[in-house]
Image (cartoon, rainbow, N blue to C red; front, side, top):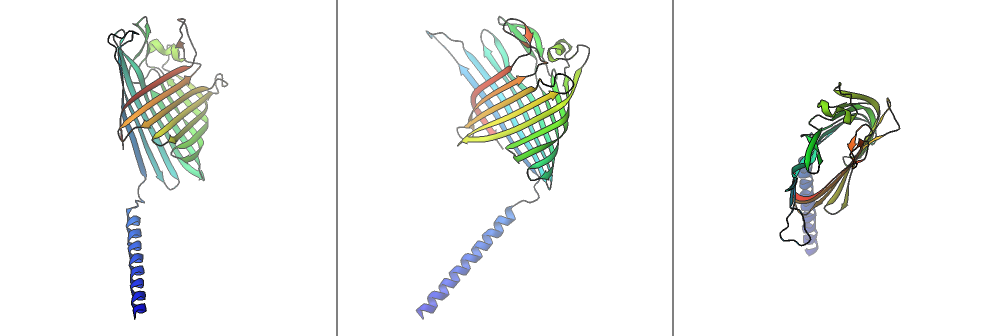
Length: 299
């Protein structure tokens, strides 16, 4: 009798566990949203740097810097179609008593990639990139503000064209366009020659090959490195001189809201004349670096 009772209780227990597991599985299945086609992610970051000296024997300059960085991703996926969009916007100012306020960061960029799946991880694509800035930039000599070097929509770069892409994931993708158009638009007439545009024209038109690559990797827990690379070769003029735009963002998450950010951007374009230390201007490597701690809100 005890044997029958034990067997019966065991059967009831097993049956109850099976029912419970089935109910759990059903709840998980219901929670999956198969109709979702858009994935939206964003980071809003405010960085601040400050240094202050009082009766400091070694000397020093009081300074204050603040930067706002917006980094949004809007990605669409349905059947064989995908549409990845990234918006980057940043602006910052640095203050020193001797130099007053000067901007240390100023950029606005939209990168868009429409794709149709051709094979596993391969897509037929059409890309569009747009880059410009928010405010005027000036040349400084002996802490005196000189002539204007740039302005909103001066310059502005617009590139687009068909291509093919390899997409491992949202964190790793490469797009190649062998036939893409690029327009370098400069609204301020006084700086057009600095960007290779004739003074009496609004823009310079190019046709060539473009490569866009994006790679984001986790270096260790709470530390990630984001890489954005753009290459362009103009078939119409000096195709061997490849324009390079590389941006690296290093993010260290202290906790949910506090982050440390470091960014390095390298640009080379032989049509852009940059001020040199000897007072002359000509093609050269442009380097921008930013390091700061601040508050980041992610969604």
